[in-house]
Length: 596
Image (cartoon, rainbow, N blue to C red; front, top):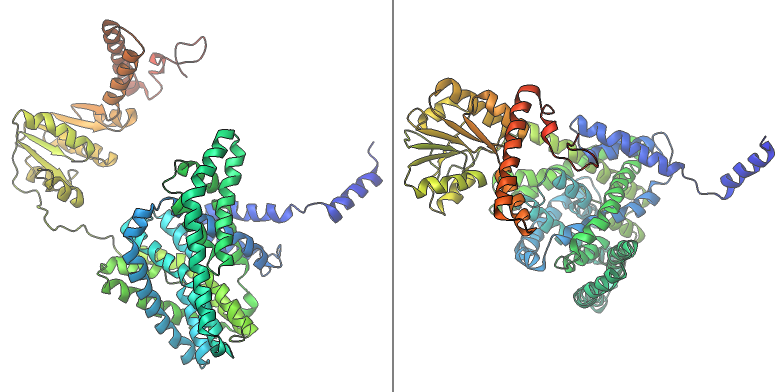
């Protein structure tokens, strides 16, 4: 029997000297529960993290008393996020964005600073405090905006690239803004011009040093480490580069995120780019989630309750004015109304760099502790509201109608062949038909694809092949054959049903995505179908046999048997379900002729 006294001493030793793992368990549990729940109900992961942080924080269940400690560690998630973004930004691509960074970015920051300055003045605060409070709100939350762009798959779209450019300019603006704080402080006018120039030179020198290190040291370093074959050392080196670059920029007065981004850009053309991204990605995801949890915990409900009116008015005023400034600048830079509005909604909040600016202003005596707490609460409330604003925008704003410039709608067409869909499959299908002189009527529902096709000598008409009136207008009733190469699985099944019912004498040849889709198309009325990967897969297998040294007659015999077995299996699957023909699959389990 165990000695209860010894057990008690062991428990006491753990309590007094051991590592307390409970906070980590609580953080992980909060994320695991909240994020899937919020994503399922359509509110997104960011709001899930923020809500979970509020619940477990000092003003919820009280598992944590000092969320600032967590925020300081979790800011590394933002740093690593910027590193991953930098890996996707080759120097040539970044150079091509210089107009957006220093043109659009500067214009947006300048206009929004002037607009948001008026909020504090209207509420009766001094000029310096009003300027700093408004300027802090100008600095958008990199973490929230990047996460939402990634979730919405807009990072590599024009909208996403322009937002990234503006965020980069805001990161660069940290140095002059901190200098502005020092200048506005009591006695700040005494700061000499030489002191300001020294800070600028230090920042530029740090950037130059990082560029030189990235150009001449980083790639050789990773080559040397790769030869060692130690996988964990490569991961350690990746973290060393990210954190080292971030720390160097922080020492020079720049933001850590800017250092990590530059390190990513410098490694973007390295042969180890994909390896680095894979190494950093797990840390980035966890720490970024921890950052959002920390922001939720930092929402001081006592400050909000004591200053609810002031915070409410300030949040509304800041958000509306900032959205107005962003929208105006976007339109002046020739963005469409839809893109300008979407950019305004995504960037309407204050960001994590505002905490740095407000802390500096408090240290210099421009703000007092209570004003700092109120402004911090305003920033956090605005960050929490952003996902809700985006959801509201999505539900209230209808989907953008495709631009029809230079696009003709299908009407009165006639041809030997009606081709529905002109993506990668349809383009190849058209070639032998056109080579033999057959006339083809082509319809496609992607206006951009239609415009691109015209540059390569194709006349493609706009039309949805899943609508009977469009099929008639495209000449389905007079075509000798109809070929469906649509990229939409459900639309393809509907097209098959319509053709079988309305044009039963016209052969319908269809592209299917996989075996299950092929069966659905045959049952819907397709005369003939082929899986889009089937032919290329057979060709690849045939070439592999040839390179393995088989004779041509052996290759022909093997491929004929393979095709026969696949066709037989397809008929069995069509009648009895997707597992009915599994006995015809040649598996690689020892002692077995078929895969289960």
